[in-house]
Length: 567
Image (cartoon, rainbow, N blue to C red; front, side, top):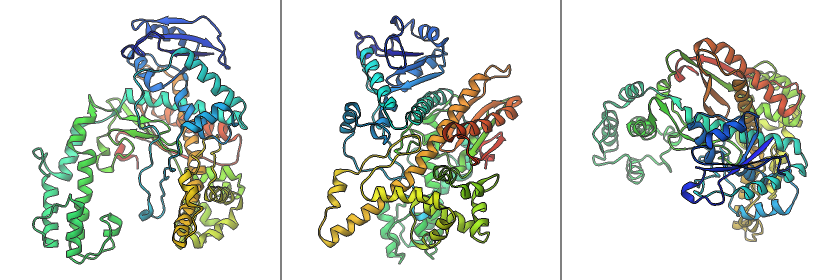
């Protein structure tokens, strides 16, 4: 059963989503019952009456509707988020080239592709991933006819796609993720302000007056000025700092830590210490604490599908970057514990599944995957095996990674063929698609025009751009499929928690999610059962996506009373 919901046609912007009109529809979007209207005062009650039958809500935006229901004490089971679905269908390689899909692709623009993060080696890490959803929802949303019409077009696009079952699973998981993200924001991550303040004092010293540096930062700044012979240096100014370093004979092109660490000079120690503490002050200092922690909870805004690969992003508070220095402030409520689970070596396991590579699957079975690879062909050297596998997935084809690639290809030809084919597709301007159907954006017209260059210098730049796009598509198929597995895992955890809700001691809730790690806030008595639930959900997610395959998606689960104790 589906129920479409929208603001009444007569609603103005200020009334949008304060009142609603409901229309039951079938899976194709045809009316399946009488329409029902609700005033602002009746809204939650009408939602609750429909929710008894566990419909899939069809609405323009989970973020626009669901917080109202959570504020009224109502949680819903399922939804179809038109906005998130639209974003996936726009670039999915599974969709037929219908007028609806053509319109979506024309309206998506011609922006250059965001760059996926690279993980090997450290000095080659790319900038932060680009968010796809930077604009807040409009104050005035679509009416009921528009909502139903859009739903009908989306359902037809899925039904006529080349892999309808996979694509439908992705859209359901993405919408479930939107519900969970909104619930996480409503619940909040437990955060002890007093402990956070103690940690800041330990690292930085007492809280300084507004506009002043903490005492520890000022001490390192003074040491740096002395070591560089620059008594008026402001270390927060990149231009001043670079000039001072060059005057002292420290020839660096950036002030990034990895480049500074190569230098041998008395100024490097205090500079690195200053940079580390400065990051802590900026990202999670007293101002951050005042802004983001209220009533013992940290409530960021999660952006589902906020990265081109399908990974989540966040707005405000840096939810996906909680540094180790302040993790001890993340403490459960009295009588509760955290169950924290992470999927071990998720991306290479996904690659084994994509390639149906039995040899790589055997390396992953019941143990550390990288050690399994090492024992199969790298003389037991785990570091070499890891470097080779990461190089294969992230396109590090030079240096040690490049030297090890032939050996990896011989050992796991089916798995390596997946990323090599994706890279070749990207280098020629083609688009690739994840296992469930999320596609990467196509090459831009500017990129294609550059490939037609004639001069030697232009051709050199074009070749470099082609290789960069190949690295992007190479990793996209793996990272995006891994994000899909994580979404299915989250959705299964949420489904099982709802099925088991109601223990006398309280409710277990997901309170944090980061790529392949999930944190649940649970009553102490339920910690063991919830740990098993999370592990069983991982196995269910694997079978849901790939069927019965001989590949272990290992999940490491710990029960802790502080986030700092998780790793």
